[in-house]
Length: 118
Image (cartoon, rainbow, N blue to C red; front, side, top):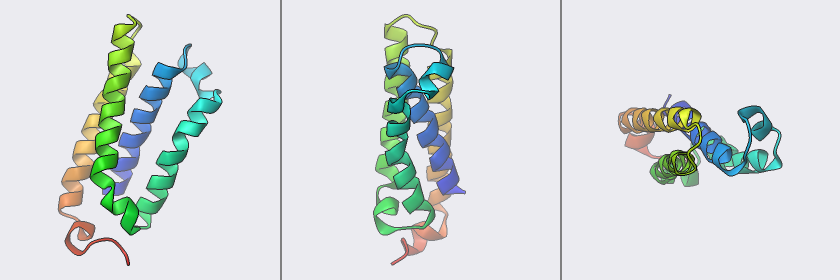
């Protein structure tokens, strides 16, 4: 459950950052290669996380902190450019809520008690 919440947080942050970097409506952003390239690190990390690889589990907190910073930067950039910042605000809220829930669930999990798979 904690890994799934981490995936939601990372995905929402990636969408917020990509929406900030690529101008145009949300549908046009999805067609950009930058969007797909920005998803690769997230997919790589979550793939290791669901298999409880040591590297991915050790980077759990830092990856979620990076996701929160990215979502906040996307929201700040949208407000700075005086755009409609509804989608970045929603992405930031989802990222913060999912990251917090992921860390809360992770603290009581078997992975936190016994460590990652060897």
